[in-house]
Length: 414
Image 1 (spheres, helix red, strand yellow):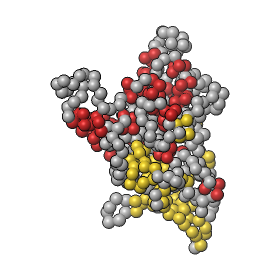
Image 2 (image 1 turned 180 degrees about the horizontal axis):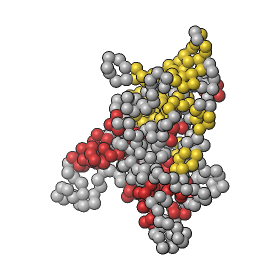
Image 3 (image 1 turned 135 degrees about the vertical axis):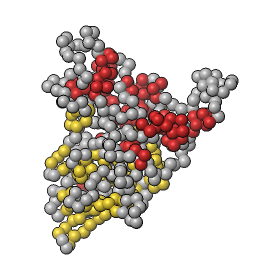
Image 4 (image 1 turned 180 degrees about the vertical axis):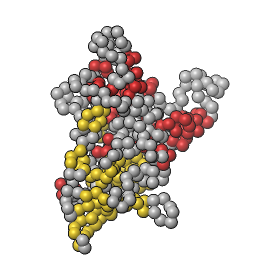
């Protein structure tokens, strides 16, 4: 039932859209605690999982578990799958009058529900169909989410996704009117939407169905935590035990203390485009030189730049970045949800003080909304899907900070 054109492509999960929208908040309807329920924590050297962090950092972990980073992948449940399954709302018609998709929720004896997508092709009563389970949810749902299914030990993307305010849509990059269940999910995509997947190629989309951890968890940015947990348990950190010198290693990484280049590498790992892997996925560790692991060609001076394709590259083009020591962490706190433009505008005003040389436009009113004019939302051509016969290109925040003629701030500071 798949088109030959799509069968031959090994592509990325284009729904990286959620992870790459740092100004957005987690959706109100999703329960953060369900994000990794059911996933098996693989036995990776030095890794302990977020449960170990909760013992001492409960408030921070609880806050982080509400962010789109943590919620970027999850097990399917009544709270993590956001589409509607009621009659009349669970059908996606396509450009092919002989093909439609039906999304269904299945409940057995009051247990946890399961979910499926079915492609129905042909005219009744002579129809054929293919049904696959939704086994992994990709995306927090703030903008949208797509779904993966296991075929044995291989992962594939399902042809129907969910988009906020629209409902069911053709998955990004899928050709409208075709039922394609054969798009493989490659490790580089999962590396930016999960903490770990145990890859077992060939083929490229073969993984251990029991060896994965969903969501972006603490150790993705802080590194393996086993040594830190052991040190804390023995009270042997930073002079907390007689004879242990203050300043001794805590056994955990703090990205805020990395040199600027390594801070930017950590964010560029997933916010500078797909790139080309040089080493196996999930082998990069925070604080290391990223270019040894992923080849991310810098955007050329005259190359067309997409607001979603390389957010780090866009930021690095900015005069603000080039004339200061700012990093992504200057404005972003990944442990909390952030969507208040007044907060980000306050960051701008710490450098661009009114009546100073850095406040370039005399008489320009001081505002709590620098962001909408100098980092406007613009359409991306890297996330494209079809809905109701129309080609849709969502908007993302442009991280190239500069003057955009003709932009005006909307009434709502979102």
